[in-house]
Length: 227
Image (cartoon, rainbow, N blue to C red; front, side, top):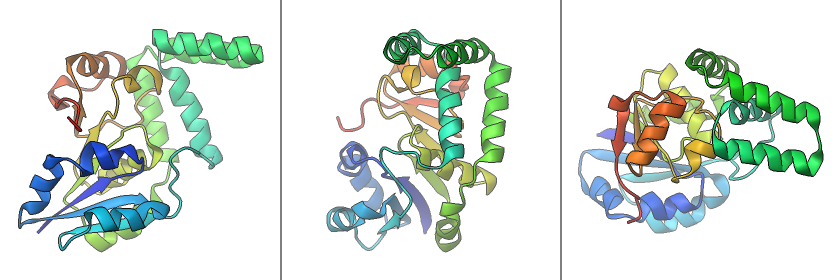
């Protein structure tokens, strides 16, 4: 049996991925075991809806859909967000400054945005993030299931990123998905580039290549999953 990890750290993933015919087609195969990884508080309903002989649900107690509590994770989120140089981020920066009048924060964001245009700077940031951040919360799951593939359903959710980092350190291939059409222009520089990236359309593919340096050969245009 081949084992695949599929993340579900955001509630919308239940609709986007798990409630689709694609997921059904996958689990009907007799040679694949799926492990859905989700916040602990959501495991009960996920087991009711999706558990079966070859589908397991594993909860992560530290996972949160909205909040980043760890100061290191928070700091890296701030840097990644400000490194992204897009018109959308420019508007967000001006709105924030109009609200808080924090000139230091505004100048930091401008400087980071300028530096983030450099592929070298982005790559150095990714290396630093991969060195500083620890995905230890997934160690037990990797040891228990020894997956053959990781599918991170939202490349901007912190737990998805950490799971991909853990897979990379173990030589396990990882597929990542851009959850929504606007993510690549407003949610920051990608902190880890997966072995394959699934996107909605050719516009998003172009943004992944141009703004984040993802090789075009790694990108698959798959449409909107829940349709």
